[in-house]
Image 1 (tube, rainbow, N blue to C red):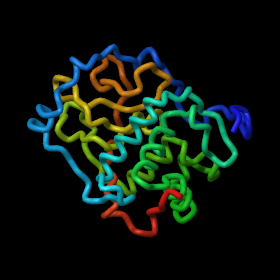
Image 2 (cartoon, rainbow, N blue to C red):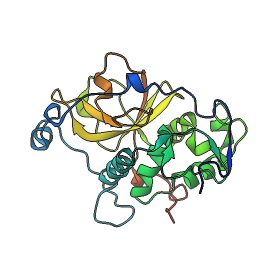
Image 3 (cartoon, rainbow, N blue to C red):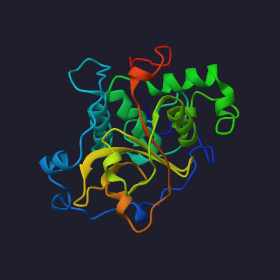
Image 4 (cartoon, rainbow, N blue to C red):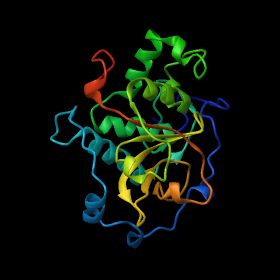
Length: 234
């Protein structure tokens, strides 16, 4: 797929303008808490679900998928694509999330599209005119979806033990979204895997002097979600 194929420029589809200068960090490996220390200090949440049957729990898979996208370093792109999906080398914050869920075997686009069709009233504020080409790439839509089907947790970033790898974090309801990393800084604050067009896609964003307000924190436990909602990545 070419970079221009099927693209229509639509202003404001993905709310918020990326500010890479406020999301970059010069953190080195020495700034990261060693894994054994992190596991000793903070109980690590493991999902009871292995949706894709690969022998790895969902939360670990979600982190792996988000990290793969971060390492791929897609160019920031919030354009509208026929069919929904941007090219693999392009994407916005929301693309990091569906790619993370794909690693665990979930088709997040199909799940979102189906839920909007079944319950449009819940999404009317964020998707007043449902469009399957873009709805799953709207932060506000994902915020509603995870509010409905995820475990809602604290938004206090100082309560570091409550933040676990594979959790979803939403900033200012419709502005930005990311995946919580399994890495922590020396103070125990978790890293965030996200795309704001910044150089470091996995960074200590919660510890920055300036960062967007956290308004949503979710953990997706498929064992507590109706089977009709779950869709397998094909």
